[in-house]
Length: 116
Image 1 (spheres, helix red, strand yellow):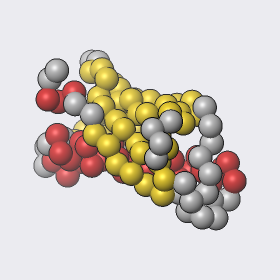
Image 2 (cartoon, rainbow, N blue to C red; image 1 turned 120 degrees about the vertical axis):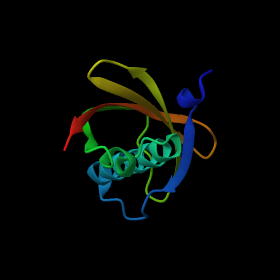
Image 3 (cartoon, one colour; image 1 turned 60 degrees about the vertical axis):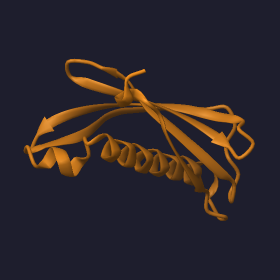
Image 4 (tube, rainbow, N blue to C red; image 1 turned 90 degrees about the horizontal axis):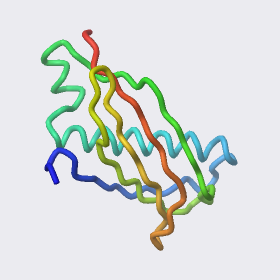
């Protein structure tokens, strides 16, 4: 497997008062963005690295498929990896798991690199 395509994982804890499903989706979105950002940084393609060339990442699309909504206070592991590279969009996939390794859901994001 190409080193660029290896996965990266981070663990987060949902806030104890997570404001229901809307709050959960909001927090999962933030966790996914943070995991993606950290992985991109480790790959050498962070926003900061791109800005040196007057480029930046733009999120074009995000989809969620939750099999079970995590509970407030529950720890979740976000795993991500780049899954495809197109002419315009780069796809990044995510798996969301609980502490026991149960898959809670999946997400995919499509990103574009644009001139600033």
